[in-house]
Image 1 (cartoon, rainbow, N blue to C red):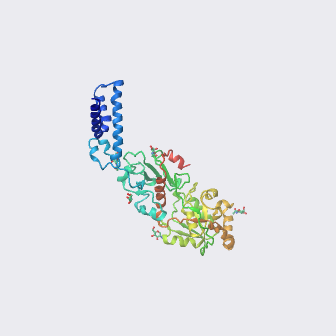
Image 2: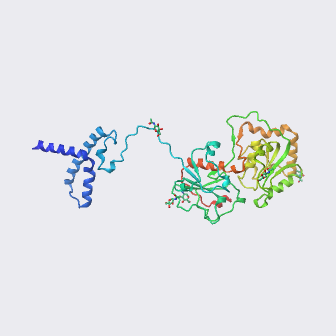
Image 3: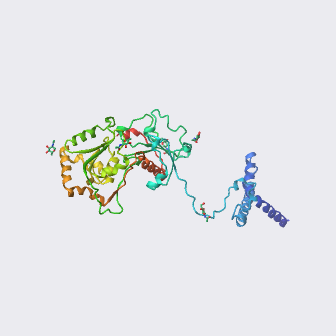
Length: 406
Ligand SMILES: *[C@@H]1O[C@H](CO)[C@@H](O)[C@H](O)[C@H]1NC(C)=O
Ligand SMILES: *[C@@H]1O[C@H](CO)[C@@H](O)[C@H](O)[C@H]1NC(C)=O
Ligand SMILES: *[C@@H]1O[C@H](CO)[C@@H](O)[C@H](O)[C@H]1NC(C)=O
Ligand SMILES: *[C@@H]1O[C@H](CO)[C@@H](O)[C@H](O)[C@H]1NC(C)=O
Ligand SMILES: *[C@@H]1O[C@H](CO)[C@@H](O)[C@H](O)[C@H]1NC(C)=O
């Protein structure tokens, strides 16, 4: 009797093996949920215990014979959808390349002429960590959205309308100084990151003057045939240029300044920019408006060309946070313009003293800024792309203008 019982039990357990986990998990649960508990107290433990043992044995057998690959034995899983997803142990341990984050340029800054091919980030700056696009259909997948301040309409009607995905960051992009930035209501608390010239932006755009890996022992000062030069395209006093005009007028009382004006609003012809600049001993690096950290390509240009900048902008100590102190002439160094021009005229006759302004070049190198007018935004946008690939943290930007205009 007992033997026979055992045999039938064994048989049953074999049957159960095939259906295995369903015995334990499916059946009792549905029964229990449809009716009131069928068993209670100790009564419940006996079937549960049997069930557990059977399940365990079945699992061991299962693992030994079929566990190597799920695909080999599909029959066993047909009636158990939860097990269909079981994936075979991977034979290829190479991790898949993580997807690059997407930076969506919602509007190109200023005009469509500033659009560029994303491959430029790789070609020029070796930035290849992010997918740059202006395809708005990718909005819902975009990790960050670039919104240039000038392109945002005053009524904000051209901001994205779809709800913002939780992971998505909006980047406020503005390279202008406060003097040339218009406040627009409604932008104070919607951004996550700032991309400006300021050092305390999340993403700060600079034309780097960096300690060089390879010391540049014999820097050759380019041939000079002019004393002081100034390239100027913007004479509109409304953009804050009054101060620099006054300084120029004052300076030109004492010294000849070669002015290259293009009243049509553009710079010197792109191909003439560096050659002309390097032929001058000094260059007037006058910012259009004076603000902390607002030190632009007007300083980088003469550095890259091999010319000594005479700067007009924030105080000397602010300049020294960007460039070596002995690399430029600052108005702060003199009690008045006449004293400054005296110094310049003295340097014109004293090559040894003039050469001292190039000593820093032994140790540092300059990345030349763009020359072509519509390439201005390539570096900042590529930097933004790189930034979002490296920084995944949660951010909110509040009181945007209180910060920017401070
Ligand atoms: C592993 O996967 C990668 C990417 O899918 C593939 O390029 C590579 O050939 C695979 N290696 C092997 C050994 O299967
Ligand atoms: C983004 O998703 C929303 C739903 O959350 C949808 O209404 C909208 O059309 C999607 N936008 C795009 C550009 O795919
Ligand atoms: C001045 O600007 C115009 C158009 O913007 C350009 O065609 C011209 O070459 C520029 N002139 C000089 C001297 O750079
Ligand atoms: C400029 O400053 C120098 C040195 O302090 C002084 O000798 C000179 O008279 C000043 N010139 C003018 C025009 O104020
Ligand atoms: C981005 O900023 C907005 C507005 O402050 C905020 O609601 C959102 O949660 C922020 N998202 C991320 C991913 O930082």
